[in-house]
Image 1 (cartoon, rainbow, N blue to C red):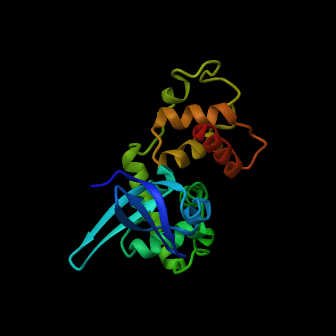
Image 2: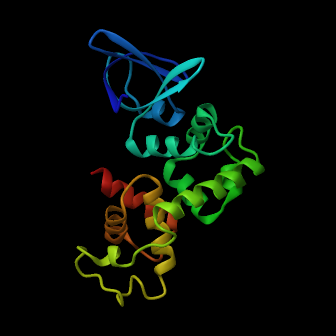
Length: 210
Protein backbone atom coordinates (compact mmCIF):
# COMPACT_ATOMS: atom_id res chain seq x y z
CA UNK A 1 0.00 0.00 0.00
CA UNK A 2 2.81 2.41 0.92
CA UNK A 3 6.17 2.18 -0.85
CA UNK A 4 7.72 4.76 1.44
CA UNK A 5 6.79 7.63 3.74
CA UNK A 6 8.72 10.87 3.76
CA UNK A 7 8.34 13.76 6.17
CA UNK A 8 9.39 15.40 9.43
CA UNK A 9 10.28 13.26 12.43
CA UNK A 10 7.80 14.12 15.20
CA UNK A 11 8.77 11.53 17.79
CA UNK A 12 11.16 8.62 18.37
CA UNK A 13 11.10 5.78 20.89
CA UNK A 14 13.35 2.74 21.22
CA UNK A 15 11.26 0.86 18.62
CA UNK A 16 9.09 3.36 16.73
CA UNK A 17 9.22 6.67 14.91
CA UNK A 18 6.39 9.06 14.07
CA UNK A 19 6.71 10.85 10.74
CA UNK A 20 4.48 13.81 9.85
CA UNK A 21 3.44 13.76 6.22
CA UNK A 22 0.88 16.30 5.10
CA UNK A 23 -0.44 16.80 8.61
CA UNK A 24 -0.85 13.06 9.26
CA UNK A 25 1.40 11.33 11.77
CA UNK A 26 2.45 7.82 10.75
CA UNK A 27 3.67 5.62 13.61
CA UNK A 28 6.24 3.25 12.13
CA UNK A 29 7.80 0.27 13.87
CA UNK A 30 11.44 -0.17 12.96
CA UNK A 31 14.74 -1.81 13.84
CA UNK A 32 17.45 -0.53 16.16
CA UNK A 33 19.75 -0.21 13.15
CA UNK A 34 17.39 2.14 11.33
CA UNK A 35 16.73 4.19 14.49
CA UNK A 36 20.47 4.61 15.04
CA UNK A 37 20.92 6.06 11.56
CA UNK A 38 17.73 8.11 11.47
CA UNK A 39 17.84 11.83 12.04
CA UNK A 40 16.72 13.69 15.15
CA UNK A 41 13.23 14.93 15.99
CA UNK A 42 12.39 17.85 13.72
CA UNK A 43 14.58 16.60 10.86
CA UNK A 44 13.40 15.12 7.58
CA UNK A 45 13.38 11.36 7.08
CA UNK A 46 12.37 8.86 4.42
CA UNK A 47 11.42 5.31 5.35
CA UNK A 48 10.68 2.37 3.07
CA UNK A 49 7.60 0.66 4.46
CA UNK A 50 5.83 -2.65 4.83
CA UNK A 51 2.07 -2.55 5.51
CA UNK A 52 1.29 -5.52 7.77
CA UNK A 53 -2.36 -6.56 8.15
CA UNK A 54 -3.79 -9.14 10.54
CA UNK A 55 -7.36 -9.77 11.69
CA UNK A 56 -6.78 -7.85 14.91
CA UNK A 57 -4.02 -5.43 13.92
CA UNK A 58 -2.74 -3.14 11.16
CA UNK A 59 0.87 -2.05 11.58
CA UNK A 60 3.41 -0.10 9.57
CA UNK A 61 7.03 -1.24 9.54
CA UNK A 62 9.68 0.97 8.02
CA UNK A 63 13.40 0.98 7.29
CA UNK A 64 16.04 3.45 6.26
CA UNK A 65 17.10 1.50 3.15
CA UNK A 66 15.51 -0.84 0.62
CA UNK A 67 17.96 -3.62 1.50
CA UNK A 68 16.74 -3.79 5.09
CA UNK A 69 13.10 -3.74 3.95
CA UNK A 70 13.77 -6.59 1.50
CA UNK A 71 15.41 -8.64 4.22
CA UNK A 72 12.51 -8.01 6.62
CA UNK A 73 9.95 -9.11 4.03
CA UNK A 74 12.01 -12.21 3.32
CA UNK A 75 12.28 -13.04 7.03
CA UNK A 76 8.55 -12.92 7.75
CA UNK A 77 7.88 -15.51 5.05
CA UNK A 78 9.64 -18.08 7.25
CA UNK A 79 7.35 -20.20 9.41
CA UNK A 80 7.52 -19.10 13.03
CA UNK A 81 9.01 -15.69 12.22
CA UNK A 82 6.68 -12.77 12.81
CA UNK A 83 7.41 -9.05 12.46
CA UNK A 84 8.74 -8.75 16.03
CA UNK A 85 11.28 -11.53 15.51
CA UNK A 86 12.15 -10.08 12.12
CA UNK A 87 12.92 -6.71 13.71
CA UNK A 88 14.93 -8.39 16.47
CA UNK A 89 17.07 -10.17 13.89
CA UNK A 90 17.65 -6.99 11.85
CA UNK A 91 18.46 -5.11 15.04
CA UNK A 92 21.20 -7.63 15.83
CA UNK A 93 22.62 -8.52 12.40
CA UNK A 94 23.16 -6.23 9.37
CA UNK A 95 21.36 -7.45 6.20
CA UNK A 96 24.62 -8.29 4.44
CA UNK A 97 25.89 -10.39 7.35
CA UNK A 98 22.53 -12.12 7.72
CA UNK A 99 22.50 -13.00 4.01
CA UNK A 100 26.01 -14.36 4.26
CA UNK A 101 25.11 -16.44 7.33
CA UNK A 102 22.17 -17.99 5.48
CA UNK A 103 24.17 -18.74 2.35
CA UNK A 104 27.05 -20.29 4.28
CA UNK A 105 24.78 -22.13 6.74
CA UNK A 106 26.20 -20.34 9.78
CA UNK A 107 23.43 -21.03 12.32
CA UNK A 108 25.61 -19.89 15.23
CA UNK A 109 25.81 -16.34 13.85
CA UNK A 110 22.01 -16.19 13.58
CA UNK A 111 21.51 -17.25 17.21
CA UNK A 112 23.09 -13.96 18.31
CA UNK A 113 19.78 -12.28 17.49
CA UNK A 114 17.31 -11.95 20.37
CA UNK A 115 14.67 -14.68 20.29
CA UNK A 116 16.52 -16.87 17.80
CA UNK A 117 17.51 -20.28 19.09
CA UNK A 118 19.39 -22.96 17.22
CA UNK A 119 16.25 -24.63 15.85
CA UNK A 120 14.88 -21.36 14.48
CA UNK A 121 18.29 -20.47 13.04
CA UNK A 122 18.40 -23.80 11.22
CA UNK A 123 14.85 -23.24 9.92
CA UNK A 124 15.80 -19.79 8.66
CA UNK A 125 18.72 -21.26 6.73
CA UNK A 126 16.68 -24.12 5.32
CA UNK A 127 13.69 -22.06 4.18
CA UNK A 128 15.61 -19.05 2.88
CA UNK A 129 18.10 -21.16 1.00
CA UNK A 130 15.17 -22.81 -0.74
CA UNK A 131 13.76 -19.42 -1.72
CA UNK A 132 17.11 -18.31 -3.11
CA UNK A 133 17.37 -21.54 -5.10
CA UNK A 134 13.94 -20.96 -6.61
CA UNK A 135 14.72 -17.36 -7.52
CA UNK A 136 18.00 -18.29 -9.17
CA UNK A 137 16.79 -21.68 -10.50
CA UNK A 138 19.33 -23.34 -8.22
CA UNK A 139 22.39 -21.90 -9.91
CA UNK A 140 24.11 -18.68 -10.93
CA UNK A 141 24.24 -18.05 -14.67
CA UNK A 142 27.92 -17.40 -15.31
CA UNK A 143 27.11 -15.37 -18.44
CA UNK A 144 25.59 -12.70 -16.19
CA UNK A 145 29.00 -12.23 -14.55
CA UNK A 146 30.64 -11.29 -17.83
CA UNK A 147 27.92 -9.69 -19.93
CA UNK A 148 28.36 -5.93 -19.88
CA UNK A 149 31.29 -6.03 -17.47
CA UNK A 150 34.42 -4.97 -19.29
CA UNK A 151 37.70 -6.81 -18.79
CA UNK A 152 36.20 -10.01 -17.43
CA UNK A 153 36.02 -13.31 -19.31
CA UNK A 154 35.17 -16.88 -18.33
CA UNK A 155 38.86 -17.78 -18.02
CA UNK A 156 39.82 -14.56 -16.24
CA UNK A 157 41.65 -14.83 -12.93
CA UNK A 158 38.47 -13.82 -11.10
CA UNK A 159 37.08 -17.25 -11.94
CA UNK A 160 40.34 -19.19 -11.80
CA UNK A 161 40.04 -21.01 -8.48
CA UNK A 162 38.03 -18.14 -7.03
CA UNK A 163 34.55 -18.76 -8.38
CA UNK A 164 33.04 -20.02 -5.13
CA UNK A 165 33.77 -16.90 -3.09
CA UNK A 166 32.71 -14.68 -5.99
CA UNK A 167 29.40 -16.50 -6.46
CA UNK A 168 28.65 -16.57 -2.71
CA UNK A 169 29.12 -12.79 -2.59
CA UNK A 170 26.84 -12.32 -5.60
CA UNK A 171 24.22 -14.61 -4.03
CA UNK A 172 24.31 -12.53 -0.83
CA UNK A 173 23.52 -9.35 -2.78
CA UNK A 174 20.70 -11.11 -4.58
CA UNK A 175 19.19 -12.03 -1.20
CA UNK A 176 19.18 -8.30 -0.44
CA UNK A 177 17.06 -7.62 -3.53
CA UNK A 178 19.56 -6.79 -6.26
CA UNK A 179 19.15 -8.56 -9.57
CA UNK A 180 21.81 -10.92 -10.88
CA UNK A 181 23.48 -8.42 -13.20
CA UNK A 182 23.58 -5.61 -10.58
CA UNK A 183 25.02 -7.98 -7.99
CA UNK A 184 27.69 -9.46 -10.25
CA UNK A 185 28.77 -6.04 -11.51
CA UNK A 186 29.05 -4.66 -7.96
CA UNK A 187 31.11 -7.62 -6.75
CA UNK A 188 33.35 -7.49 -9.83
CA UNK A 189 34.12 -3.82 -9.12
CA UNK A 190 35.56 -4.55 -5.68
CA UNK A 191 36.47 -8.24 -5.74
CA UNK A 192 39.69 -9.11 -3.92
CA UNK A 193 40.44 -12.76 -3.17
CA UNK A 194 42.51 -11.77 -0.13
CA UNK A 195 39.51 -10.19 1.62
CA UNK A 196 36.97 -12.01 3.76
CA UNK A 197 33.70 -12.51 1.91
CA UNK A 198 31.82 -10.29 4.38
CA UNK A 199 34.19 -7.39 3.59
CA UNK A 200 33.73 -7.96 -0.16
CA UNK A 201 29.96 -7.72 0.28
CA UNK A 202 30.25 -4.58 2.41
CA UNK A 203 32.51 -2.92 -0.17
CA UNK A 204 30.07 -3.82 -2.93
CA UNK A 205 27.18 -2.33 -0.97
CA UNK A 206 29.12 0.91 -0.46
CA UNK A 207 29.58 1.11 -4.22
CA UNK A 208 25.89 0.51 -4.83
CA UNK A 209 24.88 3.17 -2.31
CA UNK A 210 26.90 5.87 -4.09
